[in-house]
Length: 247
Length: 367
Image 1: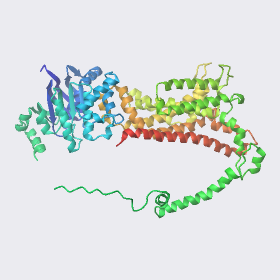
Image 2: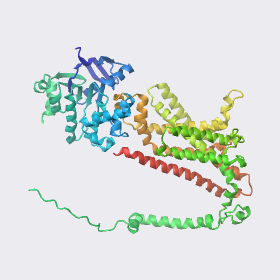
Image 3: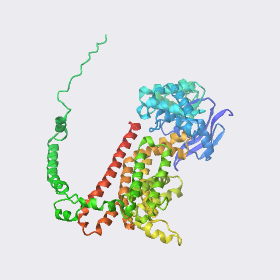
Image 4: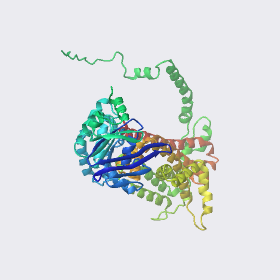
């Protein structure tokens, strides 16, 4: 596939000597494609998306992001990280910096943007996630949902081509999940390539072009939401869907 | 239909909780254990304080008169010893007629330290100011230029030496400690090993022997005819010693930073040094302020060990002032109380400052 922005070619990864966490992973993500990844814990979904921005290294195969092959080359890793934004389950905001400083840090120090310009752009992103009025507060003064929206805005400040979401709503109180998903849905409507690890199946149905189910380090099934939810091909997928939607 | 909201007017509490009496009742006589402790401590104070007051104030001799002091010996303090000997205690062997020089130099350095503690002055020019202060300090102390009589460094002593050694060794040891702490957590085995060996080696040796080696052994390894001033060697010794301990304190802070912080920084494209400087160190150092200040305070007091290599800082200068003087030697206690007061005021100020810093840092850590 020539228009793929992310390509996994027979990727294998081990933790230590005996935990084979990714097994022969083959995946091509098209430009602007929105993918939801689900699966039981320990199935390798987080590891998979963390390989895309080299937070994890792999031992076999090849990961290509926007034409750049990820390996040991530090320059390649830097180049990829400039193109990829990431949102974590635990937000990982910098607690000693204000919300605004969290957003301007990388543009100023990595992108060498002047402070004033960086702050203007940061405010635009904060408005986009509807939290501009909290700009001068410290992260830990905000609710979980607000913190996660700040984290999304922080990633957006580097104008990434690809956004990775690693269980963005799993650490949130139930009433805050919607405000975060709404922001992600709004982003999804704007043509950015997105990969999201989540168990929010309603969200998957609403925005995903493809849903991927992983188990034991393998991609078991990848299909459009309609096909995936209504006619899962694999026995294992059906089992999993029964468990999470069944009640 | 919704019920109408009935507002309840505010009223006074049934028992008064403000004021002195309620405070006493609550805090000093809350229950029988607390009351017992209060009575016991008041009793102890009544037992100890009046005799001490008698000795320190009522029967004390203030005039620098050795005979009067001798007469009052045993019943009253002889503060006269301070009036008589303070020149030597404060300035050590520094030539008497030039003692205005260390006085100004020390005040200047203390002023610089105080200024550096104030947030409003944390500007780029602070570094330039320090260069100027240090240059002035050493010119004033050492002389040899601008018509100032040269004074050899082994004659420097007393409070100026204490303040200078403590300030410089803390300022030099701190950045070194941060580097060593980072090095100890480095991915590169060579750097890690060097840092571990340095820390363990220094921590396994008493400061006295480090100073001894710096002073007497080090020159043996120098090429013929080349000497480094004993003051510099001692300063390097204290700095290396202090840095090893501080490095372990910093490492404690580094370990408390969650991995997610590093991952977030990496994801944003920050490099190693940017991550350390902007993300890791501000948080790690904020966490270790109390133990760091603890260490600073002990360095200040450890400078008294330089007496071992014949540098007479405050404590050494006191011994110098009294040991050889048969007339005044009996009144060492009073003289020791005098330098105790000096040490205490400096250390107490440091400890208060540390509390203030903690309070400032607390703002961003509302959890």
